[in-house]
Length: 102
Image 1 (cartoon, rainbow, N blue to C red):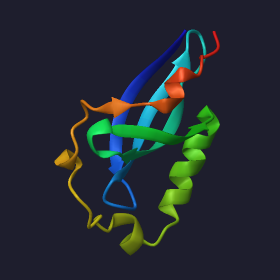
Image 2 (cartoon, rainbow, N blue to C red):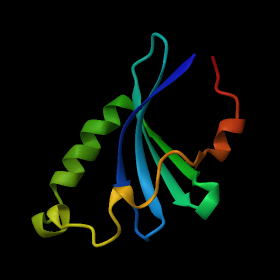
Image 3 (cartoon, one colour):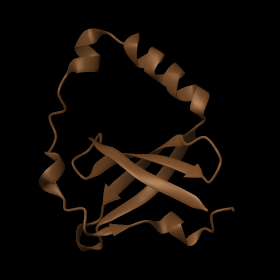
Image 4 (cartoon, helix red, strand yellow):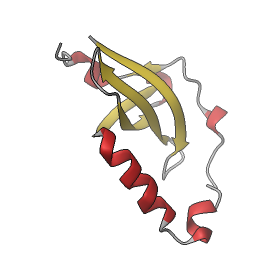
């Protein structure tokens, strides 16, 4: 059985997008990090358009790569809306129609 733990949201490149960070795992396996690109579709709520799942060993490599960025780019603030601009109660995940393996 697959379990998920929501870790946080990053504001997206446009005003109506975000990247959701989710820990995903199966019983007995090492959990992984999944990055979900979501777009807000008005009254339909958030829709997941893409998922990227990192293997456990890739998370450290991602952290190392982020630390190589110029500090000005890495630490700059996003000029978009605040995280509270769109409520989380209208979430539609189109990919949930897909069956997770056991």
